[in-house]
Image (cartoon, rainbow over all chains, first blue to last red; front, side):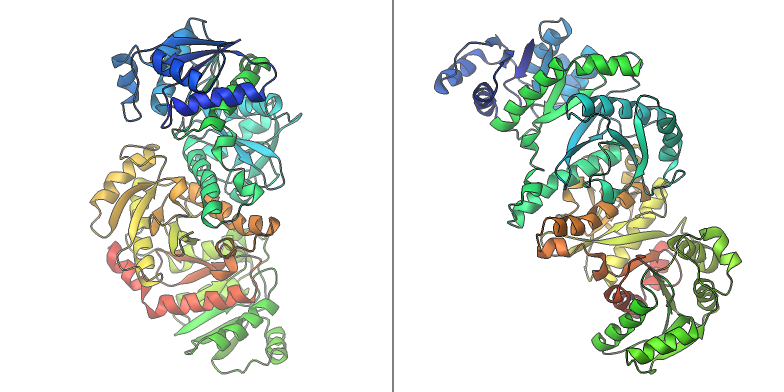
Length: 312
Length: 312
């Protein structure tokens, strides 16, 4: 199992990425083989400074860096020797089994869609987020931004992807799958939600519990919460802001602290053949460490294979 | 100035409605003339019990009540002698200048749309909510549920309505109007947001500051926040749940306490000729008192007239 890490991606790269390796090795019993993409000399020096052994590590020197403000569509073509471009080449050719970056999100998405492509039958991949529940558990919300406009069939596929993720990664045996809507009754909502409801109801791959409302999002109502990527992205960012709100109000409350995205590391792209995990630009060492752990868990649990099976 | 109040609407009516009158009279210097709709004997008895003088009060006895689970479209026809149906008759005939109810929301909306109708040029009315900002101020978010599917022109009208409301009711001299979206740059978003952006940018009636994201909702970024009623309703209910979350976490934090809807009383319908304020089903006395104050302020500030002017 080989996991590739873009060491140049993110506002605090490569230092926080290297520190993330250190955290990862300290906190895992069975380290994966890691492939580090980035400037060879810089990475070597930082590994020495942090006293990290070279066991389980291979450095792949890359000469270019895609900046945060580079155009996602042009960047991959114009910078073929960048850590992100090389990463996708290695992922596509089978030299890596998963790829992690906190770099240019758009470039990561373009790379995913054009290099490793969607699973057969998948209309469009999705990205998801973990939503902490006030009762203690967690739910998964998707799509959170890859598909601002959706067809009903897409929401139905998101439900299947989220269901597999909740089972294998969140460890929920029989996830409660719900449609995010403006009311509880069938027939409520915009045209998309109205059309998606019957598809979800008929879907044999999931345990559909009906509509949930905005007030249910942080409560223990559903394990998988489905919506199009426009509403999902706005909800994701509002939820993330609760950590900031908690800090501004000096709350230091366990629940609000859970909205710190560093705990989750990054967002996996779902509906593709291999794990690609996209981190926040401001990822620190904890986020990097958690992204590596997530990629490893997704590979161990064969999440992508299971999704392929359920979606075909 | 005559404000009508449905004394039978809401889970705790008529007792909480009567207590709301008491609160209102205690906390206002210039009481409006109030028209109370509901069961004459019950109201008389409760007024006596609460020791409320009959100054400024007129009771209009009504014989029917629209229940919370009555079909909104049928209820008004089938119960023409209900407090809500009579209320809309008096509003339409000019015997009342504003109407308040915490009863069946659907019936209130149907009554508003079919009895007093939208202002000339308004595609569809909207409902809004006040969003507390962590920095201390407040913003207005609309639409929060009347229009689950919207055209770009509707969002442009919501912006104008919200702008007038922020100026006259929230007291913001030059409101910052923003489009809720998935990214800051022009061109981001779903088809609706992409098409609404240029309209908002060209709109001379407002000070448009561009897109805001989910993370900006509770921050001091914009005074008027515009979106379609699907996303808006989900955001509204998620925001309202923060009060409950704060209670569940025993926070007793001033900011989270501000999400208690009782503070705002109810949602005014915007884009119609007269103030109609729809309260939560679980409205208590504070909510009733605040709804009366809001209706009075909307009349005093001539909010509807100003909207008509700006929208034509």
